[in-house]
Amino acid sequence: MVDLDAAIGYVVAHGDAVDRARLAYLRTGQAPPADVLDKAEIGQVTGGGWPAYWGTDVPSVDATCFRLAELDDLGAIGRPAARKALAWLGRSQRPDGMWEEDAKLAGVAPPWAQPGDDEARLYLTTNAAFWLVVGGPPDGDDGEHATRIARAAEAFRASLRSDGSWPSFLVTGWLGCALLYHLGWFYESAQIQVALADRVPEMTAADTASLFSALRRIGMSTEDWLLTAARRRLSETQRSDGGWESDDGDQFNVHTTLTAIRALR
Image (cartoon, rainbow, N blue to C red; front, side, top):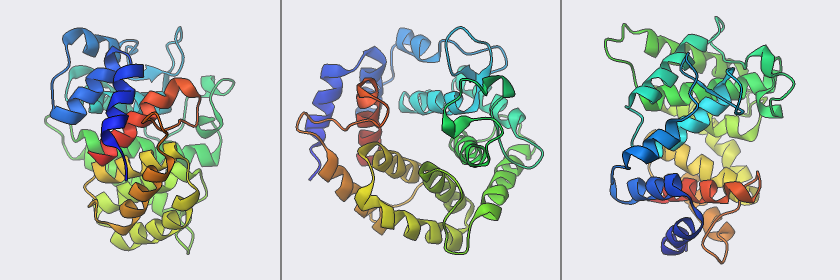
């Protein structure tokens, strides 16, 4: 069994003000203080995205999606900063329906966001489209928002192999699955779920939490067999201190734990 009380205690003990505000919103819907929101939104560039690294004005698709996840945990997806970021994501979609990082980031981007890389392009496409789904259309939308999401879904569907696997990183699978499930492509989504279920027993805590929270966010039932398997895997990977381990270093353990709490709440 997952020990949610221990997970909450871990975030309280090790998180910063933004982390604790995310926890409060996820648990009770408590609105964060203004200074916490200011801190969470800091660094946004003029065009609307967030850069991957401080001191640069080049917005990153991957970094912007990461920041939107934090803002969603604060109940801030409807605030002006998030709306600007979502509008920037929409404008950044390529004519083929996909997303790719700015070529200026080629020397510094991680493998999953490298400009010119097919696997990275597919991952960024599912990630950006996922957040367009979560964020919803802008006020006075003329239908372009839905068109962008549909074009991204078609690009992802075109990449799927006959067995439901995909030519990209593991995370691309559950983000693409969430996208197709949201749009009603249930056969293709189910194929991906089968492929993911085979991987769950060996997944890291961070991957499991991310999969679970993404599919919950678009409305998949916790009784779904894939999410039942993910819950079991989270119970197996929870540490004795209540937290879950990140794949990106100890400094992200609180983020991973919050992602698990988001999935399990």
